[in-house]
Image 1 (cartoon, rainbow, N blue to C red):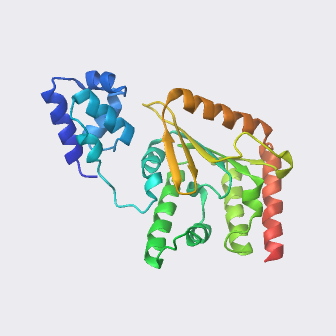
Image 2 (image 1 turned 45 degrees about the vertical axis):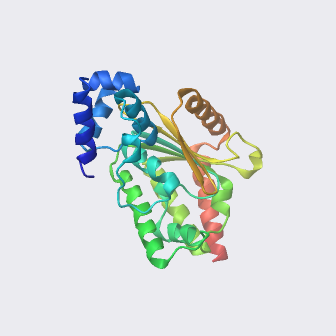
Image 3 (image 1 turned 30 degrees about the vertical axis):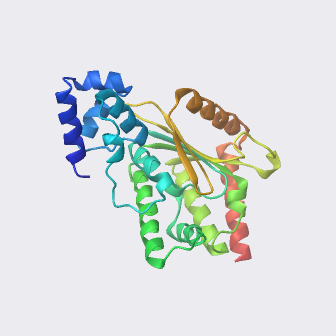
Length: 264
């Protein structure tokens, strides 16, 4: 991204006579996070920008002029996208679709093609490319550590076609078997569980507090209030405790892939 924003932040900090640590303390952030923003390596979240505005008494300037990167994502997901790229640990819960970072190209295209209002072919292509780019974080064999907790309905509901589903589930199996991603399935026989109302992403970082992201129909929100994030982590842990172990989850995914191939 352009470093104009970071340079302007640095200038305002120096005008205020603050060190990076003093600004971090006033804005309830970490010094390294401030340093990354000033160097142009990160874009602050909207909440971070509001805190910086308050700390520097710059009204809403930093909030209003957050830089936008040329990536095709829904507005509601833009902040979460930046956080996802910085996370050291990601824990996903999938209620309706395979998590975006784990999607194959054909599955992603099928999901995005069902949007309303309909996307143009060009817009759909750009969004698919962005979604596949997100998956590049898995090219690193170690970080981020990714866990995927998946409702069995995600595996059973045909998205695109039987062939697309078999390919997508096989991709999940491959990632789990090579130990790049930990996958656990919440079986339909479980009935109600603590995460049944929404998808959920939990993210941890090297130099800032953990955050959560929840999403529904045309609604998505990043949560950074410590008490709420802790509550969402607790719900995730409780659901995970009811999920199938890895070995049984793999067996169920293989059976689901076989069923889709059969129906195809």
